[in-house]
Length: 332
Image: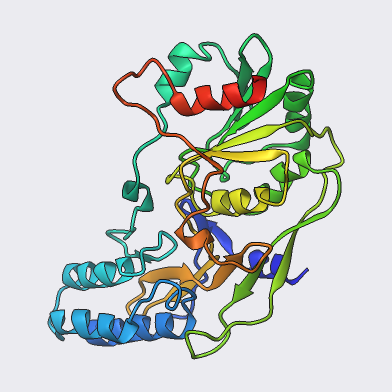
């Protein structure tokens, strides 16, 4: 499957994948470095048209802010502002003294408070590898918190967790503020909730100089895991902090009638990042692909919407309204 070959080229970096480095071409001239990275993005970034970004206008806005005597700090500030015009947390500039980020989670309300769950729902949870879990609602519901796709879990650990909740009426999988990570953990987790190999979406990769140049669609499948599976209702909690691999996960659930998304739309990050090295040795990355749903629609970058929208009420920290709604959906 060609999408897997594409993913294999992307290493883990920060909340998601690591850049691929090119040879240092050796100049610190600010204008040459600006032109180099602007051109790299112009030739390879995948979301110019979808986001209606006039990249030439962006260059005309930011390049005059620099000159041949600009300091490294000034160069970084200008380039970071230019990167943020993409509104994409997969677009990052990495220098020895700073890393730029857009921080898409700040574009929406915060909908998760871990202490509320610890104090009023699960004071003594089980911790099985990277999974925090326990029973809710008189053992009618299982709750599993998976905080980051960066954190691996073994098949044996997942078998233990799902065996524990086999007699529940449903499971709540909490992916709020999960910033993504290892894309391979997406099918590894979703494979526990499906009976047969299922096509869940497509990926297309930028492959030419025009902003509209893309290769053929690559199928993205979820294959059932050989271990214990859970085929009862599953409610997945998401919010604006659910990014990258979590957006992949959320989009894939649209193909499963037993899974419901609840909370707020995800933070996006539907494109796989790649990058390289600037002339001065700094590195960068940005999205080179797009994620499409089964109908070929491209909305994942702006966030996969929840099936049921619920918000956290910060006036009462003893309750998690999103979690309460999920419990109610399962048992009623």
